[in-house]
Length: 375
Image (cartoon, rainbow, N blue to C red; front, side, top):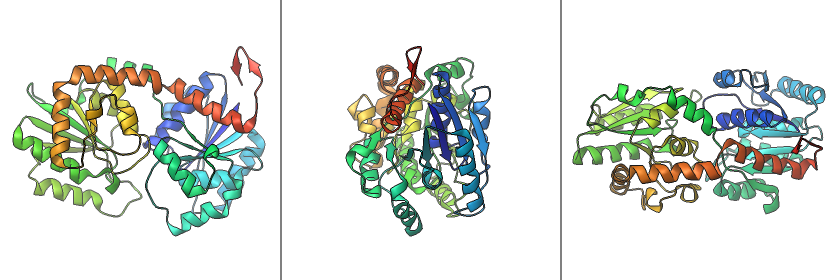
């Protein structure tokens, strides 16, 4: 099958990571893949080197850039995909407008959010150009049905996947970066990973940190991520002010964007997640593959994913989350083994790619079989 992904860019977010992963897995299985980006922010481009995935980088100058739309249509005519799959809002919209009769799939990567009036109008006016939606969580699928006014059978759920072999290779040749950030033999290290934006609720994570430090001064915290480049809200400054107000400067470090997130998580004792809402939690999946116990708030499909029910705190109180983090330390070995086993069954790159290809087949029709594989 020939698959064209349309996405805003190839930044360091979870959606971009999944597009790269799926593209490489599709090519490995004999399919042909092209990625068309709508802006020049492509730091993940190097991850495609030698993969056989075609990358086309464009740059839109305005919300609806007719020049980019024309070039995308030209690419579709020339490249002749069997399916066009949009990711993120701009990718979804441009995929609809440029589909040219090719089946168009959109993605839902989040949950429990509101579109702006302009975004809602864009979806409403192009609704007839959409064939189906793939959500990466059951919570997101329910949102997609409401958002796009689609029948249940037109919305599929395909959980994110991870390349376990790649993770294992990286960890085998890695040091322990968390120990370099916070050295010391008797230190307990907690990783907090995610863009610094309200839905991640960094202030709650800091209040959990304060609670833990009050009980045991050996706790240390590593905050991985930064404010989005497109944001001018000043939320990062508010989070850092909260850190100072809680007198955590000696216990928490903000390290910004990192390309060694799996290595950082693997060298931490616990991953703490305080999200209010999002889709399938990539960072949770990576921690599970890396052998790092996860303590989290209740959002999206996380209760379906984590193997121990107690890993999801029973409230959003700092006390409940601090108790969950502390229990992760005590039961680390059992939790790590159960998490890894879950990933190996439910969330490998192959599992995710096969499930997505089955969705495409439902829209495209049967493909010729070569060597036992649909192409």
